[in-house]
Image (tube, rainbow, N blue to C red):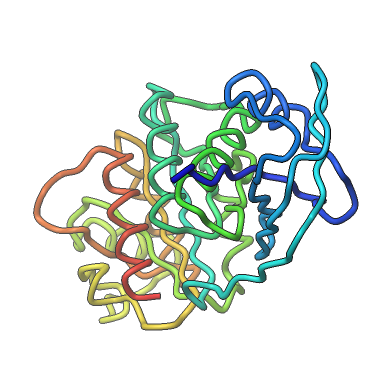
Length: 255
């Protein structure tokens, strides 16, 4: 049985040909010709059964046969925010696997101890599209430009999602920083618990994962002051990309 080929076509109904990069893959790698069946995905919840109608060296035209609206596999909005690793290959691996597991939005944080201050979003977008096609996801994961940690937590302070920050500090260190910053006294809300115990079924969630040197104590204190719950991912000390992937998996399980 011939495998169905999926192509990302954001404006599938408004066009009759594959985007340039998808067309090159269809023509040069898959050697598709007129009459071949293909599946289009618009990244907004709909698949389309289609047929190749004409090809040349640069273009692959199609005709849509049937629209196939998809049901969401989870209801809440799942958002992971992570400080990119110095080795970009590890971050690209994370993005690929996070999309395969299932996440709605990925943000990149510029933190005090970050070892990478920039990355190519266009490259991350290509990885997202490839993983989306591989895992047959009907919705494309949103990827955001890198933003300073302080700007991100300020922006998220009024979000109605459950907000969490993963870190490796003792509670006493953060409590003292909170006191120094605003006279806050220790409360049960600031006690670090396992992320798996903190997530709420069906509730939007955003999880922050720091750089290889962790967030700074001040960053954690600032996030907690703005309503982020401190959480742990377990007893093992994890690499940044591993921690972020564990967080995505847990969010997906409780979605």
